[in-house]
Length: 344
Image (cartoon, rainbow, N blue to C red; front, side):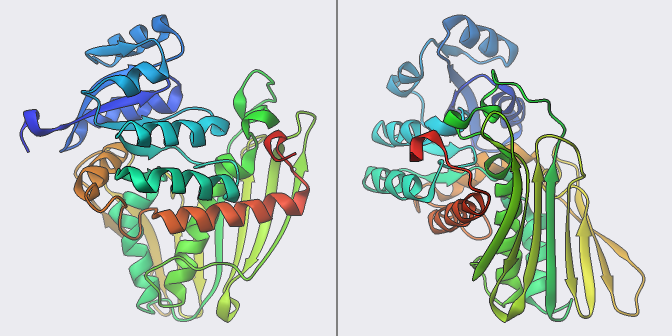
C-alpha cells in the first residue's frame, strides 16, 4: 500500500493513551497520522506538534466534520464513548473505541444499533486481542495440548492514589478498576474458556461471583471475581487501581499449563511476545511469537484489512464479543453494588 493509499487517522482526545496510539501508528502498514481533535485548540496544537500531525482541531466535532479523516481512534473518558462512537459512525468514519466500549451492556446494545446502519468498521480497542501470540495461546488450548482446562487466572493491577480530578476516580465518568482493568481480565477469561471448550468464539460464564472495595469517590478501587463456565472451567479474576498486585494470565490443564507475565501489552513496541508452556513430563518452554509492527499499529491494520466486513475476526473483539463482555462486567459490578450515576 502506497503512502497515498493509506487511511487518514484522526484521534479524539489528547490523553496518555492517545499519545501511545499516535506514537505507534506510523509503524503501521496502512495508516497515516493525520489529525487530532480536542476540547482545547491549544491542547490539540501541542499534541499535533509533538506527534508531527498536519491538522489540529479545537473541538471533537470539527475532527468529525473534516472530510479527509477516514478512521477515528476514540480515546475519551469512558462515559462519552457511546456518544462519540455514534457520532463518528454517522459522520462515516471507521472506529476504534478504547475500552470499555460503553458503561453498560444496555448502552453498548444501543450504540451498536446506532452504528449498524452507517456501514463503518467498529472495534472495541482491546489491543492485546490483535496480537498473534493470543491466537497461538488459544490454539494450543483448543487443540488439547494442556488436556482438560481446569482453571484460568487473569490479573491486571496498578498503583494509583485517589484523585477526584481524574476520570478513573469519578463515578459519573464510569471510573473504577472493573471497567478500566477488569475488562481485560474478563475478555481474556472468556476467550480462553471458549478455547478450552473447543470453540473459536469466547465462552460466556454460567455463574459470576464478585467482591470488591468501593471507596469514597464511589468507584471500585479493587475487585475480584470467580467465574464458572460450562464443563466446570473455572476462572479467577482480579483488578486493582489502588495498589499493584502484579499482572499475569495463567491457564491450568490436567496435562500442562500456560503462563505469561505481560499479557495485556504483548510485543508492545514490535518485539516478539512470549509465554511459558509447561507440559506434563517436559521442561518449561518459552514460546515466542513475532509481529513485525508495534501493538497499537496492529489495531490500525486490523481495521484497514476488515473495513469492508465492518468487524474484525476472532480472536479480535467482534460486536457480539463486546456485548457479552459488557454484560459480564455489569454482573461483576452488580455483585459489589457499584451503580453508576448514569444508571440511577
